[in-house]
Length: 311
Image (tube, rainbow, N blue to C red):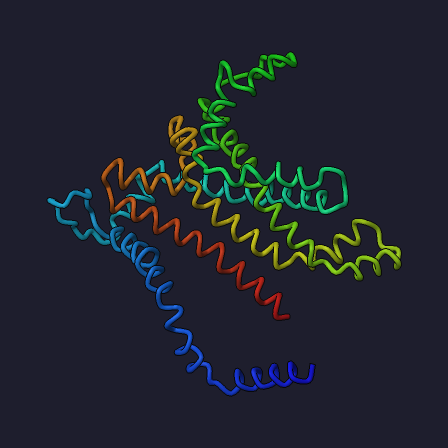
């Protein structure tokens, strides 16, 4: 014990005596490969997309990009109705993702954190959809929503509600909500696992002390569980916002942005402008707006949560 303490003390003194800039230089050789990959595959494409947003270019090498300044942004905000539909749908998707799948995941985690028969099996059942590729989930739900042979309409006919059967993905009124239901099915499992991991850090002695003080289930949840879950909640919320803003595969696989652009989202509209309409400048402008919206949502929340941790 004495030897271990001596070593630990020596290691602590050694760490404290090394200046931060020297520690950074020592760590740099180990960080360099990851930094290079990050710069090449993430930072450079991001900067290049912003640069392209100030040019008009069809994407063909025989044509030189023409600098147009802010013209692409002016077109985007004044004469592109699909952009506003995509922006509205993306905002709706973010808000709905924060409210519905996150709450369901928390409730499932609270339920499956109790000792019960088949708990591990139920955890696996709820988590399995999260491991599927989004395009696979889209293929499955296209079949479920099939107007003639799909499970939803067949079930409605079986229970005598056949009048409610319809083309779920072909009606602009229901298409976006139908895609979102598939997203809930896929997203709940991952957030549930994060909440389950967070629940393991809830101090049992505090829960028992609250019980002895006469606190009810709701009071224990609000005053003990929720504060202990704060770090996990921060991670879940940030990941949910990012995943909601970059939703792409599920929309492409289920509706392709239709019918009549009613399910268009920013990520898909940026792709469509660049690679289908060959307007790389407009595609870059949409991607830049998406980047700014993401930063505007995530950075303030991270700053707020970090201030809360420090206090």
